[in-house]
Length: 275
Image 1 (tube, rainbow, N blue to C red):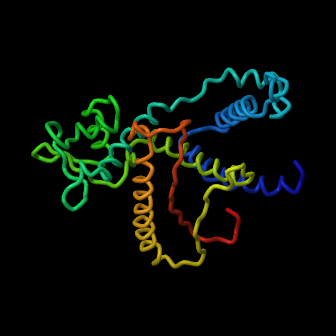
Image 2 (tube, rainbow, N blue to C red):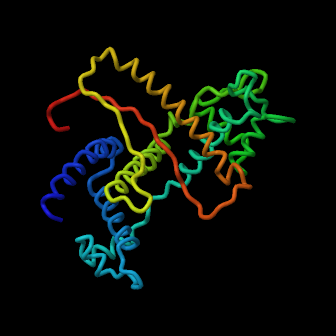
Image 3 (cartoon, rainbow, N blue to C red):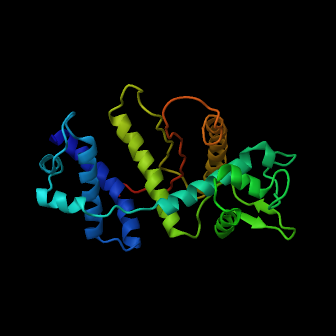
């Protein structure tokens, strides 16, 4: 890499590593563990994405691409890949249930708000909601998970009432760390695509920020951005749900793709010093 590109990419890596390393240190992840994870990703991507067409990727070529010795490449290939499928499944199923509860007419009241649902029985019930949008997971398991994170409550008459607009795992560090991996991963993938866009062109990537705001403005902006962001996401959710084959099995078309839009809020004290 020439000097023209090395400096800006090095500065960019330092910026994205700072908040990540804070999280790693808070969770007791040592540099050695992080180093092994970084090496594993280097070897995995070099092996799968930087081969020569028509030829099997060799350990020697992976060594040259990554800068790791052949011995180290072979050692890293034997490392077990961390598996968070349990958190992924739990997050996806719970999120689908809450999203559908806020969107689908069958589960809304006369004012268009999520209706308190009886557990079982005819018509719109919590059991029917879970059956439609959470697969074959037991209804009680989904209810217990949503109660655990404070997303729903069970009323004295047995009905279940929705308390939140989205599934956010408040009490599970494992589930919150899963969100770190997926959401940040999607953002970096989008930026990576836009650095070298392909035939579909650049992907949407925007932000709005000012750096001389008084403390008193922040609470109001937090509320405004949360309200506007939620409205946008709910509108896009309705559009996507009508075209997703898991929700509408009759939808035709080729391939299977994941697409979405993420919205996040940030604030920090301004400093002229590099953070």
